[in-house]
Length: 258
Image 1: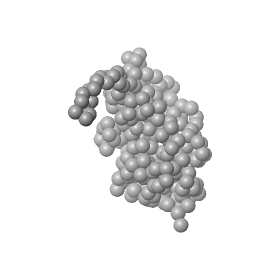
Image 2: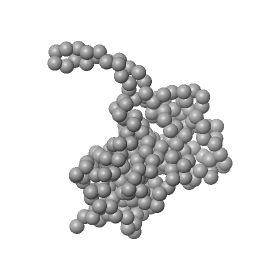
Image 3: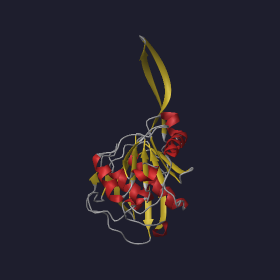
Image 4: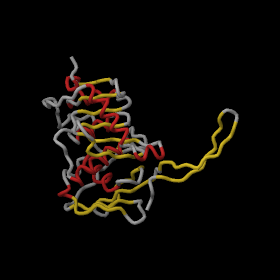
């Protein structure tokens, strides 16, 4: 099996001196997705929670709606392929569009189409102080990041605690893993807030909408298209979130804005 960390050595130059270090770095590796015996694509990912990554990707792409459709999901013995067997036939999308994901994500979802989801009537509200606490809890859940650095983390919260978290070199993969963990562990809280270390681009916003999370928080920036989509969907989009400050780009009424 492939491990998420790899031993490395490096040399550091600092203050006119060289120093040798033994360390670990995060693994980035191709893992193929096979659906009903047919190879669909390869993820560039960190090899943890691979079953969740595969199942969550199929959910976020609208291929499946629940685990009731999944007969089996397993990683091969070499760790470079995930086999997913569904209890019905399914047609692979004819074209995959490369997204702005940092390790080359793909999607077949038309992100510019009229959304089939709306959160405009959702009454969820959180206090501004709670945003900083959620970001702190996200950082506390970063076990791989503390060991190696160079990895994104996303978490699903019910507003008070972290329900699930996932780490990966690809920010978009973390939300697929969150979706897969929700399905596999049957952990869909009534209140859903997503927090992520990654930039919010259009595919990240789409995955949040698919997870029915009316609030999406990032420690960094949103793209112009993600802001437009958040407005259309009715999602509260928060960026540059820190302990005592954050920016709200859409639907600010959910965080006590007046």
